[in-house]
Image (cartoon, rainbow, N blue to C red; front, side, top):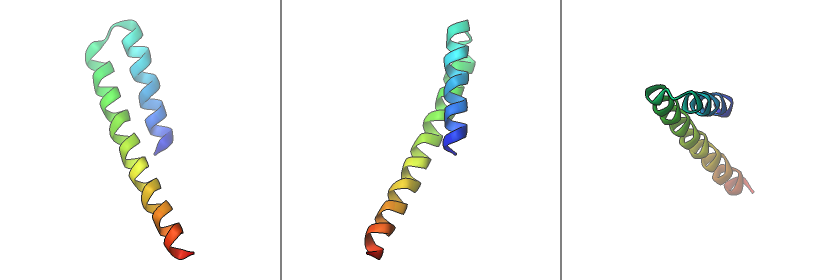
Amino acid sequence: MLYWAVICFLIAILAGAFGFLGVASASAGVAQLLFYVFLGFFLVAYVVHLLER
């Protein structure tokens, strides 16, 4: 998932550089969503790891 978030981020940067505002905002939104999903999975895995000790 982090891979796809980075890909969407790069697409958003390129689209912003070329001036395609609709594509840039859509890609940035997907990248932001994937970032928060990945962050949530990381936090859950971290808490589970701490509880197993």
